[in-house]
Image 1 (cartoon, helix red, strand yellow):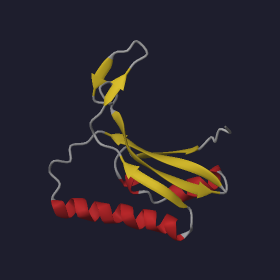
Image 2 (cartoon, helix red, strand yellow):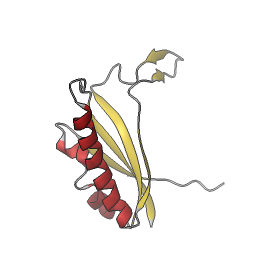
Image 3 (tube, helix red, strand yellow):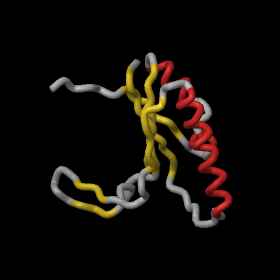
Image 4 (cartoon, one colour):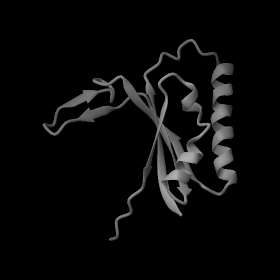
Length: 115
């Protein structure tokens, strides 16, 4: 099996109106989806990304916020094992990010470098 990363992308949204119950319900949807992948023995790991950060350019310019010049953000990722890219794409079906307007899952193979 090959390792793949699914990168979750969406436009930056204002979630300030979400109740704790809304957030818990959304978390449960993500856990259920990831649990389905784990049940197939194809789960490696996952994390969400903070909404704050910094970006550095080739000129050494540092700016606050990784999204200063883009509308789309990367909210998190999951690492999976799959037979091939088509198999990895099937695992992305039902991803909760796809229920959000302009939500996307980018699926990419992991390139392993030999030492």
